[in-house]
Image (cartoon, rainbow, N blue to C red; front, side):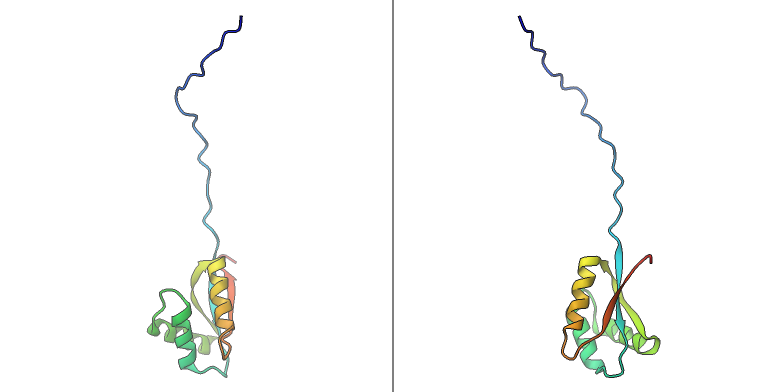
Length: 103
């Protein structure tokens, strides 16, 4: 004769708390170019980059023109790459690049 034992449901199995690392953030950088029309760059940046208003875009544009590049914001990789591609595909082209935040 087989005796079937009921599985006892006691305390739930405590699972290890896994340490999740935040996704690495990337800086979206506007690169300077002498051929830029400031109004076009500011307008496109406002249209493409989340939560960027005209004042912020103008400031980033001025910093890029003075220093060679300026940060538009920090985003997860996919988002930063999307913004970069949209800027580069603008007509006329707006040069942008990505830098890893902790690089």
